[in-house]
Length: 295
Length: 269
Image 1 (cartoon, rainbow over the protein chains, first blue to last red):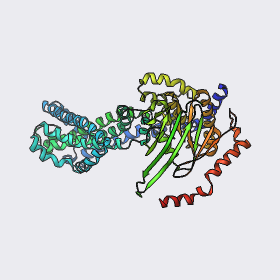
Image 2 (tube, chains in turn brown, yellow; image 1 turned 45 degrees about the horizontal axis):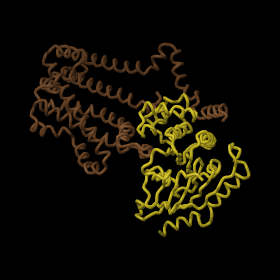
Image 3 (tube, one colour; image 1 turned 180 degrees about the horizontal axis):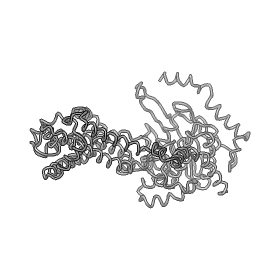
């Protein structure tokens, strides 16, 4: 066999089929000219600079508006007051107890939702009859605003930590089950055919087809579920608790301390952003095989 | 004559049409023999049951009656001696090229590391050396189908079962792939059963072209392609090639196989 000719033909084939380097260079070229331009031009084109500008601008405007009396301090507080409230808060032992309790509730509830939700979702997705059997119930529970469970959960579990764990569990659980289930149900039949044609057993089918296909669905569901879990903490603690950050928030509101309220809001926001970010990082790592979106 | 590789005996495939509820005969009493190291192609109009035939041969469907055997063993329990090449986009997107090529071996119980090691020379044979660690979506359609072929070859099967593997490729790439498939086939001494709806592809590649009628799928002709090998793509302008293509074309377009008659036939049953 004429291997040189073969190599040649493959190189030709590859040259025809590979994306032209010029196509990929367009984006780089835009970056290049930016790096060469004057400073104002570079900053003007930098998304991070623009973002910081709006954020800093917003806080400055808020501070000024509040000090000038354009908005009422009682309603809006002001950034400097919130920072001071925060500094006072972190020096209290109570605050750290609240943080610990809220985090414990979240970690327990969310972990339970993952540990139970994923296997349940996998099973309901894989065993179709079982899935159809439970589907209406799942949709029903998913559609119910989970907050409405609070009174019941308090009756069952009391005002302690367990009622909030149950509430945190209830939010993410159904989201994770449904996400996992959809992932399993959308496995392209073609891939299952490939595995079966090569004689894969059920365990191999699960590990090489089902799980890789479903993992991105599970993680996307988890990212959505983080928000639900935090909402559950806030509401659970506001309405049925003697401690936790939600309780602190409710307490501050009852005393018209808008700076403390906003400090608590800030903490919950950071929790949400941070946890979503963690899931996003895992997602990116898992989805390494997916076509990446440019820019 | 040595023992045949693949045999279909009285193969019958019926199924109930999900919407109309009527019974449809996809394959009707089909007998077939494929001898060692032959390149055999089944050609037929779409919906003639040729893909169904390959699904049965791959053990993915159970026939209503009859059976397909590979070296005397029923295909439903013999995944080891066949290598399946599928239509487009059948690579697992979450595995790298080398892992995909090794996948068949892995399914057969070979450890991932060893499977990859054994798949490497095969990947090289199909011209993908240096692409081991990229993901399928980063390859062109033609290169993806090379991986598909490598995956089947890596299990060192008695027979390659190829289901319209080049159907989704553009015309130029398809011809390149046809030529390279012949080269790979020449190197590996495998038996090949190839399914296509493209007449010229069938004649170019094969030792034998089996022509299948529209539903119910029956073999209506077994044509020996007597064009000498190795075959260059220029063979496609050879008078003998043109004549054979014409012969198959006539068989597929004979009056009693016309579309109108086929529809009427389906409506009556």
